[in-house]
Image (cartoon, rainbow over all chains, first blue to last red; front, side):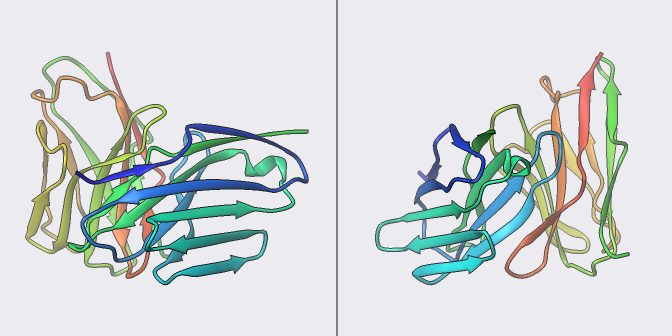
Length: 109
Length: 110
């Protein structure tokens, strides 16, 4: 079967750095996405990785290792508004999206 | 402004009633999707459509129906056969490397 694994919940301190991990097992691979979702709202796109390595976008970076079936989202200089769920999803060989359950990130002052 | 609209924001369903959730887009995207999200869980695909007049079942299509008569519109009907419809419903369009989501409709059962 296909599945995506992420931690259910993480807690971090304002101003710090946090890394949210995602491991996947899918039928083929056509890219991995990270989305941010605030409570009661729709997900918003953060990043897309299809090649190995690190993609940096301001305070957010996303890393991919296809051989390990592994990705992480790195958030720097955490702000209170970063409190949200972070969803990892993978596009398989049939271009279907497999979604993880999301990681709820709690930021404390 | 380009975007995706969903209506209503909240919808109440009585037992045995069919209800229809609206999704409209002006992004000119061919692909459209319906997802269901339950509390603390990820997104589950209900139906998707890659082109007008064609749609495919997702992972949890039972109790739902859709139509795609126009490129801009992809309404979802939650039928009385769906015994546990309370959830957050998200419509999305595909634009190449990413999906764009509407604001969602929260469906509650009376």
